[in-house]
Image 1: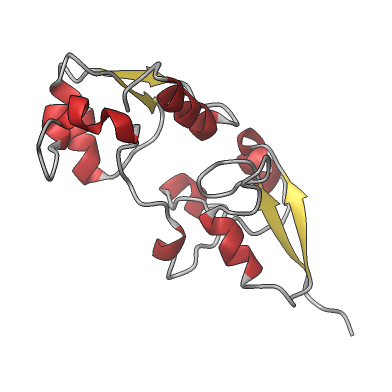
Image 2: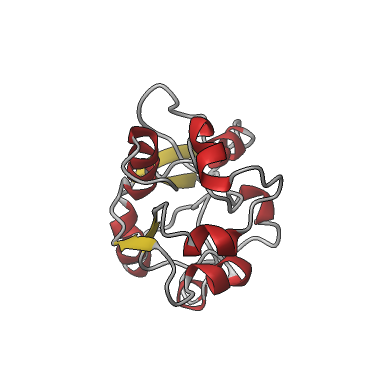
Length: 168
């Protein structure tokens, strides 16, 4: 009997998919994939930059952590319940820098953060963080450096925060 084969399109995009280092397999999408053990499944390692190219050429695979966008809807089918797969949107800072960055604020203001000239942030140039975040991140005068993403972009941002080269 022929069984449908599920092919997971995987790329190293922490915190969603972690395929390298000590935390390999600990991403939120990695955990979702583990829930599907027992199916006829295999992994297909693919750089993020090739996902659309491969899909347009007819390669079939499941992407456990891709955001729904109009251009992608022309190529992919999206499940009705993707929310639990999506990383929460938040600001990442070093714990030892919280007081310096936010002072005594219990619930820090994103607007105050991005307009604060004493701290610096970094974001990907080509993505949206959702309407609620974007209205602050795109404010004129926001103190945020924009960088073009690469395959290890998310990991690189965490490394820069950890090393103290950026504050958030």
